[in-house]
Image 1 (cartoon, helix red, strand yellow):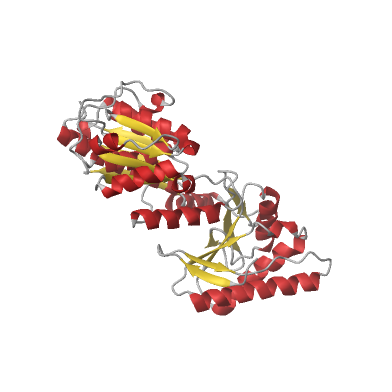
Image 2 (cartoon, rainbow, N blue to C red; image 1 turned 120 degrees about the vertical axis):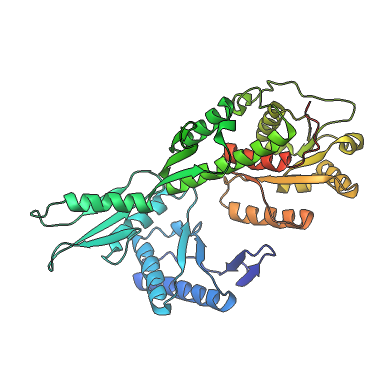
Length: 410
């Protein structure tokens, strides 16, 4: 509730704070005027403060207290009108948290109700005759994976042609059929690698087909976003396999998913110390235990040190790399910061990552704080994050680790 202001992080993210709350009134004119003034002044401030803006996100945490249906219509209509007047190709996002389901549904219904034949989340048209035109509108909801398709056409029209149009559109814009090849001789993939990749693809509703005999290729069919994730997973596995092949490292004894909560391979250790000194706070212990179990399954020796333990300089001295699960809690813990500062003082290689938890209404502010703290301590942006896809995110971490080929695995 402070004054209006503009703030830009060193990482490039931009925040505009505009003091406003929707007035709770039965006077529609006052509500409409207040909403129009807020949108107009906000977009004008963005135009003045920033250049080359493509996406604008509005945080809606306080807006659902108004309780007036017209408010949403006023808001959306004013945004649409401002975009038309300014002739700027901006993408406007409204962000809802998990406690705003009813408010989101109201937005969704208003979007549907206000749509015209020029609007739509995804739309194309096919000429039928000089008098009729078929408009196909695809409406998406993040609560469901289904797609609703509405066809408006005279009964005498044969829809076969337009069904084919829909299939072509969906295949081109929503469903991806990708073939991966020539990145590595796939014959080097062992059964463990094949099983791990198959399992990941199927968990993302992507259909994989691996040809190891004729064409040495992988075909992936699924939604565009999930296929892209599967491709990223594939590239990470390729990179990890290349590194391990050069070091002649054996594959993990057990699939990593079976290491959840337990260590299936003994934690190897010799007089030279551990491969990894893993520093984290107790708040993140569950997922960090999972990461540790997976790393041990890969053949690493790992020393875990939650933030309630005292500094062990000798173990840090003997470790090859310091793995850090960074968070706001970590930065406030004296033991954690002692470990971090000592490791930095002796020039140890640091691999920090962040675990994201979007459980609070102010998670965007918490994320901002963590990002700034991370940048201050490590002089770099966050490269590895654990958010909602452990298998992919773990491979990103593992790819970074295996790049340090001086590790003693045996």
